[in-house]
Image (cartoon, rainbow, N blue to C red; front, side, top):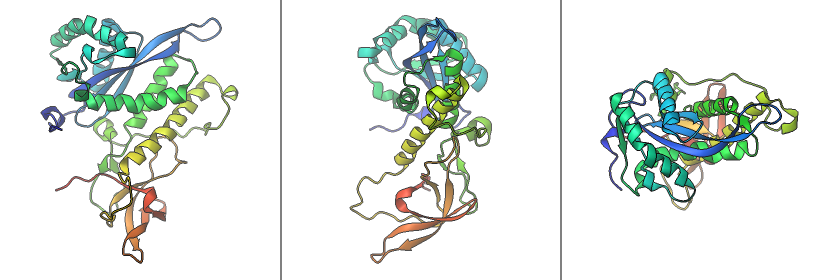
Length: 315
């Protein structure tokens, strides 16, 4: 495996260098009420190379005009990038032939538009989709659970846009690393800090997670989709932070004052359970498996299987 490209390491504004990819198709309603028809739409994902912040746009089709409109919306909200990287049309086979054709047919128009806006538009080599692992991972985070929580529900274009915007906020609220080494500081660094300068928050709505769909209004159905996505994705993200596959050999114990993320299945969206290690309790074999954790609302005791230390930067 090679080193990270220089574009991933140069500090700068969010989305100054980014990757773009499409996901889908997803199906939206052309209007509400009886006689509404289902039409294809697609998710256009932009991901920052340095901060890994995500920006999601819903586009109505695979045309150069739809892509350029999505790019204009992206630039208006996030600022103009200097470089945009994307897959190459020949990377895609099977079900993605439609997207492959779009890239092959529209790449010249896209490059011409990017050049007129002083943006470098670069494509990765042919048949080398692993060069775009950054945006492929972003597409997986969005699409994997989105398909499962939306299911057979048909949302209008406006409703689907709202769902994607809320999913974008959820993805950008994920803790990356401790903000500081202060034992009393329980705030982590998140992609949202680079976008808005503070953690993302959301109003606390009624819990409709277990309410049958036929009893919900369309607005409540959109909120239920968000809550379902949060529960699925947050559990997956916490599991990714725990790299222990087998407990057959002893590794470094958790140290005091380490910022950790606790597993909690009952938290509302964008709310993470964070704390600092206060004390560990070694067993008879000298290995610690339980720790006291200081949170904002007090001290709790948890087993190591429920504790996920945030990645630290080695000095």
